[in-house]
Length: 436
Image (tube, rainbow, N blue to C red):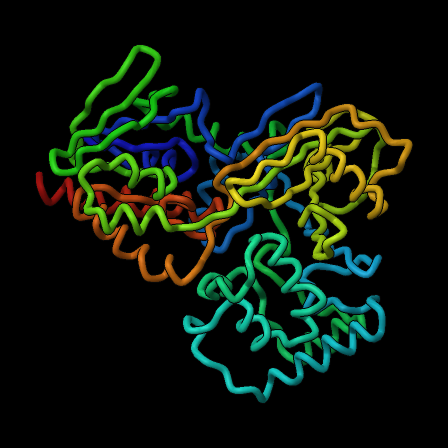
């Protein structure tokens, strides 16, 4: 029997692709989706912070489009940075036109200086050094460093740069100059367009897997694994039940998975306990005024704004709110152990949104709701680079496959979660056929 822990996209995809093999899918919540969920409050639908579909793999795109046939809308990205009291298009490095002249000069001269500088291998550099080497001091100063420090909540010389390749577009000198002059001749970034469900929010995607998934156990949590005996203990409302497993696929955070494995070597447990991450407050608001902005999302690098990003769900789909209203979410990073009282948090958000001109003093919040996402972004630091491969190998030696954004402790997309589920299902099916 194959046991799958977690019915987020990676777990659902694993179950979907395990054609003909016996499995059980365990989910501790009472609904599927993991963080790829939506909820409705007083007529507004919010996701568990922003979830937009963009694809690099044609086969995964085809699968999602088949699952959500006729229920997706394509959008051209309207994404901006707000800094120096000016909106510039994302990504910052190729859209400096409109910023104060001295800022544009800093960005141009800083980038030009990188063209002749000697660079070390990417894996040997901190994120801070990668930004300076590839984008220059001006872009680092005016966007990349303050934004990333706000997001990651640590100094950038503590982080490595081995995750940036697909997320941070590297321009050439023509792109930088065109961006300073306001010339637009190509799209930049991994998501110049995106897909989003017409109705129901992003939960429409995990829900679309359900007709093809069997043996789903909701409200069932993994509490302990004896890896030597290949026995896993699950708890639900009726009590606890021990199950044997041939293979176990886990999509829970690898830090939590290792805690539940009672017989792993102490060195592995210590290595997993030292992995770091950042938590995020997602503050969801419904506003009594239509059209507060035509943008999809906005980045805020400057310290006077407590949030690093704001998004506008009703611009993804008007079905996500009430007529004559607007909705938005703002994201505020915090260390996992830090707690901000909700009233204080909402006050900071309101002040920041008014300072940015998004809200007016006369606007009324019909809905105010705060979600604290404990595991939001994993930190790529030197410890992760050393420790994670051995943690994952040790788990695999014991029949446990840790996959997904938090299972593999990485910065990946919904597409990647679906792809990893398909890949592990293929491996298990091949192994099963060889053993038969």
